[in-house]
Image (cartoon, rainbow, N blue to C red; front, side, top):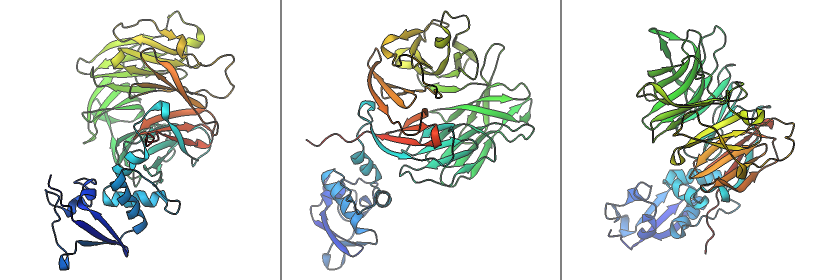
Length: 444
């Protein structure tokens, strides 16, 4: 690549900056600066008197920070520059990925540090929190969903007019999917796709049964890489099971109907497994007295693996499975109960027993009186489990406890989510949610 070494001069808001084409090349072809050069990184135009000077009507303080970032790879934000202003300027120049890479290191649960806590907009227990693909998040409470971008600026809230939100999910950075309960006789439940920036409804997802559009309650959500949406559905005309929609067109493309003895329409957790092209469906305590976990193969329209605690030789406490997650690389399903016992089941043996891990049991003695909302997540080969006001991190083939993330303010953690190099933890009290980030590695 023939990079021209001539000095380039910028006039930004009245301040003069000088740099080289080599430094500007660090911004990348898709940046504001990349547009100033030809394919060989030579300037495409000459200013009068051969002075390579460009005027930019933007903030000079932010420009100075971003220029130093291109020079050194390090990000230093002086106290007189608001971070949100810098992020907006970085977005203008196409350098937001550079800023994020300098601000956060690679995601590592053992190195996460509490970055910020945000107080919610409504009192009481929250329903769910979901990390966005770009590092933002959305928080559901009752009939409201509050959306935050990666700068943690709140967008217009989404109000479902007294329909209770059951689950939320990010289709992409521009769209949020919301599942909700049907109000009796109103036919206004189901699922809708909403703009994350404006809160406007873009379209609803219908369930068609016997060639008629039916009202239904949508529950847990999941997505596949080929743009399919999966949702547990509970209707009034025998349309119980798992619906499948095309997220691009919004059209229903399949439905896995519930057979006697199954519990699909009430599912608390759905998880798409890329390797096996199956969907994990889990109905958990306390929604049901007994827990049901299964793998559905939509190609063959059959259940290929299942487990239930009915008749299993377990104690009462061990039966109360609160969450489940499939780990394809280990050929196992991990479950957690009220005492944060981690249990593992072999995906190669349907209906097998749970192997409870003594190394993962953390709680001793009597449980606290406050509500317990244990959740599980798997990210970058690390297993995360929430319990009361902390999140435990497990690593290695035996899933040994390696660190704990604790934040006492806000009460018990009722949900957490990982995405965009951040971990978001939603507390039950006042909907306070914490943002955990991995700091960049130290400069040697």
